[in-house]
Image (tube, helix red, strand yellow):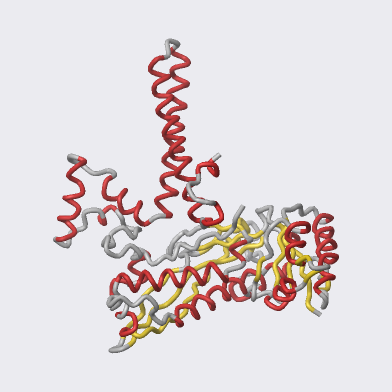
Length: 140
Length: 271
């Protein structure tokens, strides 16, 4: 249960933080499942079972992506990093440098792919999205 | 246009640290006062571009000259956009950069309180011009009396629960109290035992919610699927303009509120 893996007393944590925790734990579990299915499928000697396991693996990838997207919508910081690193070309380790150079030169390294996002805001102003992230205050 | 552009925050003569304090103070006050969001389903945020909710309904026109031709117009529920000004001293905000930890953000607090009130008013009391019915006016149940003596309240809560149950509305149930009733209930005790504690532990399934938009009290179901707050742009702070010594920001949101099952709440009416 995700509530068992909280690192701080639950009463000290906001509902927002608890929900983010739930999403992160779910994301970890989905990616673990992808890993397991991948290994099982590879080791499996029955072709039909192998096909089922690969199908299952792909389902878990879908779940992981949905979890990640939820986190991205909640966190401008995650949103900014994902827009910088995902769907980029060239060596992954050079993406950050390129993004910084483009920003310094007034370019739109990531903003070009981010028409609806707050990600083009400079990292010195993390609250640039303007949303106060109040969202639902319902606790269950 | 992105949400960030519409809010024009980058154009404001406000330093990042001051923005952080403004945002944090607004969020704190909003979370403290918003009552409806603690109870109803939340859908969104869908962003500025989201203008209306599909109701699935069709309003048919009167038949025209050709009886073979039928025309109807789709019924949608449009979102409303709320905007409240926040006027702040630039000098005061700049003091944050000099290390001040307590800039005067009274205007932020006041705007956040008002915004919470506007949203809760629409949720509980409705807003006819925006096609928002409101939980209280929409409830078909005959209101129960909110007793002058809060120690009589448990009996009315039991009656209210029974009425909802008979209408097919199951729990969990929550009790919402207006400011006066809330204070009375929390000050009251039965043989030394706090009344509020008894209500929360034995009669309802959620901590009592204080809602200044409510007069009296409301008992409602939290089972979900009955009430839906649909948010376009969630509560945000944008920039309007500035003069030499003053900057005007604004607190804004776009939303509508829908009632899918009007029987899921009953009013406890103040005498």
